[in-house]
Image 1 (cartoon, rainbow, N blue to C red):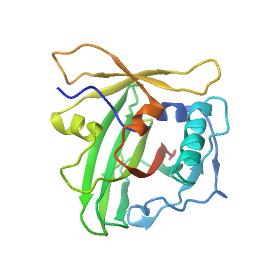
Image 2 (cartoon, rainbow, N blue to C red; image 1 turned 180 degrees about the vertical axis):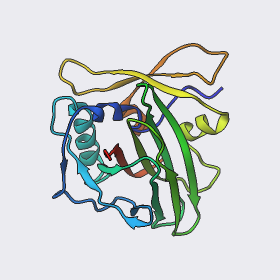
Image 3 (spheres, rainbow, N blue to C red; image 1 turned 120 degrees about the vertical axis):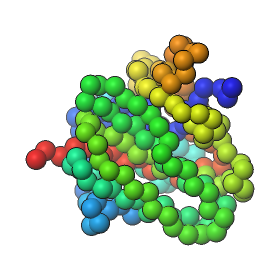
Image 4 (cartoon, rainbow, N blue to C red; image 1 turned 90 degrees about the horizontal axis):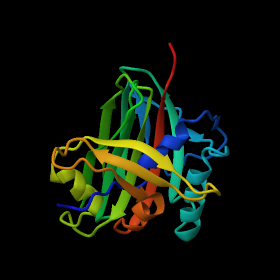
Length: 225
């Protein structure tokens, strides 16, 4: 069985559930074109300035310095139950796999992780990811762009979700004294033969990707009314 592993930052998005504003002045370049009910969406940059979001902010800053500015970005969009959100997944070069991960924060407080889409692009083109907004507290979409050379080349995180049906839940997270690291505690309730929780380090999840080119996190927060 593939080693238990969940990719990128989906799990650490629990940090964004703490109160925070959005900065409309920040650039949203690099974000997939997003629409809601067929109309262009008003996407903003997620504010990561608070103490509660410090581990994620440092993760963003560290990876942007190590790779390139804008490699890892965090944005936000207000939605309502029943809305249809569409994201244009555009491959700008051949040999790119774009994967969508989803963290759903249910009304009962549980947080479930899934991989609703993973598309390999042999040539530059665009496909559209669509999703109906379900009843929930909020949710997060993580768009991961990897250069993989062939459709058969898949990272362990993709193979983990393709292996069989999963019910992967994020139960908790922890950081160190300086709020500079992040470890996630998860469990696959879809695996009846394994009742063990497992932990993953946020930075290790990124380092194990196959030639990542860009990671975009989109918080879908629920508007009232």
